[in-house]
Length: 389
Image (cartoon, rainbow, N blue to C red; front, side):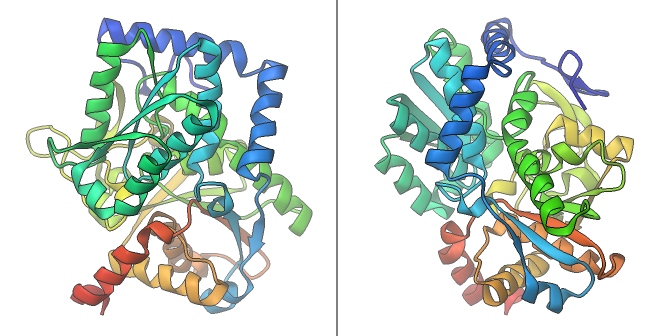
C-alpha cells in the first residue's frame, strides 16, 4: 500500500524534534521530486546495472527442494550484489538523492555491517564523507565488516551506550542528524524510522520483487504460492513483498528469530520517531534483544510490516537458533551457497512450512546476503555452543 501522510493504517508517522523534522521535510521534498524524474530513474538503474550487477538471478534450488519436499524453491540472489547484500539497492538511491540535494556528509547506522559497508562503498564511489555508527558488541561480532568500512574510507564509531547494538546505533545517528541537519544526510538502512524513510527504503528495495515477479513468470508461467523473507528492521522483506502485495493469491511470509520476535510478541508504540510494533519490557521501554544474526537485533520493525500483519495480508513466524543453523549448513552443503545468518532465518522457515505447499507450486525465498561475514562467528558457535553440537 502507499503511505498516506506517512502512515500505513495506524502505523508510521513522524514524531521528532522540530530541527529533525526540518531535515526530514527536505529529504521528503527531494524524494517526491526525483523518484519519478526520468533522469534520476535512469541514473539509478544504470548504477544498479553497471556497478551493483543487477538483475541478479532467481535460482532454482533443485537439491534443497528434494530434501525439504513440498514446493519448488527459488532463491532470489541478493547475495550476488556488489558488497554482498540487498542493502546497496537502497544506498545507491539515497546517495543519488543526497547528491542532488548538494549534501556531501553522509551518516548511517549498521547492525551486521552490510548496510555500513554498502554506504561506505557508495560514499567512496561518489566522493562523500562517511560516518557509520555501529553498536560496540556488533563491531566485535562483525570485525571483518568494520575493517571493510574503514578500508573504504569511512569513520566507524562504536556505540557503547545501552546494549551496544543496532537500536543504540540508531539513537546516536539520529542525535547526530539533529545537531548537524544543515549539512548532513542520514542514510537510513532499513524500512524503519520517521516518515519519509519507510517509503523511501521500500521504493528503492522494491527492485527485488520487481525482478523476481518477472523472473518467476518467465520460469514457471505463474506467480509463486508464497514469498519468504527474513524480517529484522524489514527492508529486504518489504522489498521482496512490494510487487506482490496486491496479488492476493501470493502468501507473504516473514521469518524472525525467537529471541527477537517483534511481530509475534510486539505491541504498538513509538520508537525512533514512528509508531510500530515493538518488543517492550515491563516498564514500557524497548526490550533487550539478541539474535545470532547481528542484523536482527532490533526491538521494532518497519511500520508497513506492522500494518501488513494487523491487516492479515502478511504472516510472520519465528524460527529457533537450531533451525537457523541447520538451514545455514543445508543451503551451503546442498547448493553451494553460504547465506548470511539473517537469510538463513528465511530458509529455515521454508523448511518448516514446506508441508503446507504442493509439488506443483513454487515459492521464492530472498537470500538477502552472503555469509562471508558470519563464517568465523558460525565456527565459534559450532565449537562452543552445546545447542548446535
